[in-house]
Length: 342
Image (tube, rainbow, N blue to C red; front, side):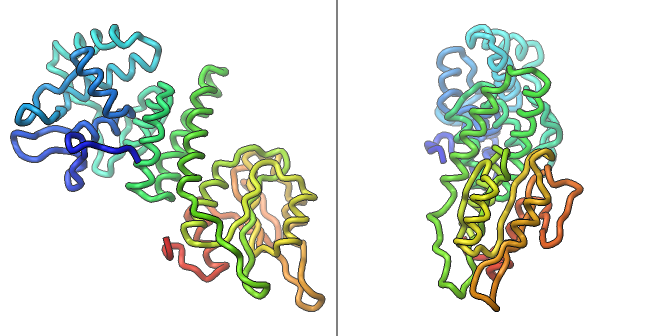
């Protein structure tokens, strides 16, 4: 997580909203997270372009009013589409002046926003908005800070399902509708999502002895390159202290079968993002793979993950609906509650 000074550390009880008439308004840390920029960037904009808060408590602490935030949102919107910072700052101040800095988009009590920002986000958590803005600006430090804060505040599962995934989907939709214009945004965001997920993954757990349940194998089917969902699942399983073996992208069928026979896994997760890569014969083959001594041979439970498997099923397989469902299912194989050891 990014470090905050006493000046911009948000009050936990108020979500960064200062209390009392002197300190009414948001702290710098809270505004930075909302907009997807670093606190240093906000202080730089204040120093260079005069985009500071309308008032400061006791002359030192910055407290940002709704009008201040609206002005900063204009600055973010303009710079994200390539307007030079100095020109964007003049436009932001000019826009705010006639209306005394209008209030920003409304936010509901669950911390969700309907404002789309620069990407087609829809009805999502407020954090998605800031993360999307940071990604579009290719602001690596802010992206990293936003992602780390989401995991720290909400936990890995909620951060993945309600912050990372909606933002990744929005970038993907924008990329699909804009040619290759946003490919760099998708690559940068994916890289930092992967970095944060791996940072949250504990050291690999050793499987037990030969009589204990084996590890969970995580693998993308042949031809499949999308590994982020498996990385999220691997991180979640590590929090539960379950042994895993992550094989990543495009695992050949022969290699997957060999790994199953060598490791004796309790479960095998097969990820398929696209319908064209989701092979039911492969899933059935893995589910039928056996190991162990004659008379006591065992087979793995096969878990099908990803939209490629939609509408498909095979005997001996399960298809969880989301990360939480997958964690619950796999935790049951080791008799560990999904809200168990962290």
